[in-house]
Image 1 (cartoon, rainbow, N blue to C red):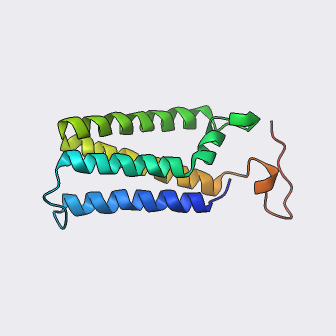
Image 2 (cartoon, rainbow, N blue to C red):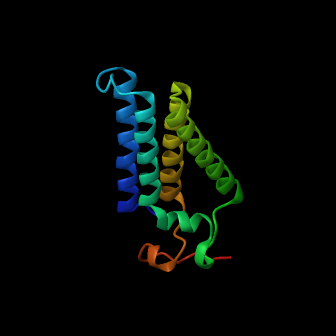
Length: 139
């Protein structure tokens, strides 16, 4: 794979998560905002970041006969996504600062691991192959 403009959009959303949470946590700005509202904002930004790169998400699960990511990666990222979703839902409903922090950490972890994977994984289909390099045989 390679980094695309969609990874850039996901990075903007992840950066927004970090900035909004950091400003709220340090009470630099948004100090009057409730934990519930911030949880909804962070959950929304995380979901938008995920949706921004939905084509790569299809690659992870091998949609359309493409080579699937290693099972350990799929399981870990699915579990981290589940943690983010549950933590976000509870943070919004109960206003838990601990679960808001869990949501932020899970969201940024998902973004970081995904971005690194996109940067270092070889292309999965010929259209992504760099010019002049032979493609490895796809199993």
